[in-house]
Image (tube, rainbow, N blue to C red; front, side, top):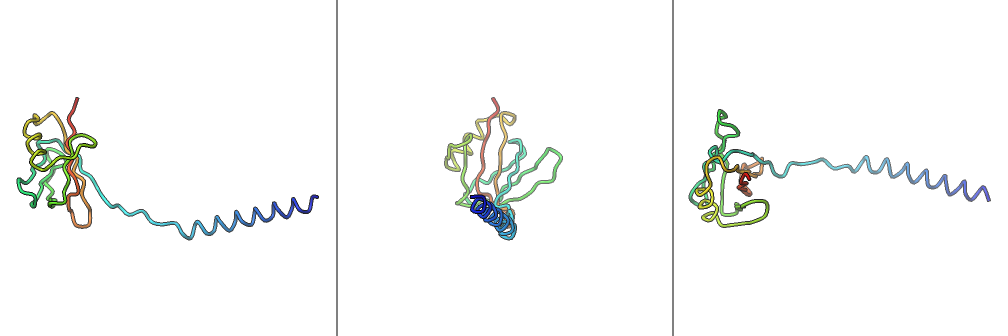
Length: 122
């Protein structure tokens, strides 16, 4: 009975070795699909039209970066409430400049904004 157990163990070890070699050869590279910038509300200028340029500074002394906003850009209040661009701009105007921050998500290859989230401080 020792020989069948030995064969089973040998087969399992060979399978493990094959799987280790195979998984190393098929590992994929991680590609950044989206990046984000967190900024205080007073460091972001949003366009009034659906298509335009959004200007964002990462800090008060940082140089502004320009990103493209389009009709496909989504606007969020908090973690999961999607609203229209007009509703978003109205809520942003109501909030004090120091009440919150904006998180601007964009694609790094073409610098297109995918969504903008307003996060109010408690």
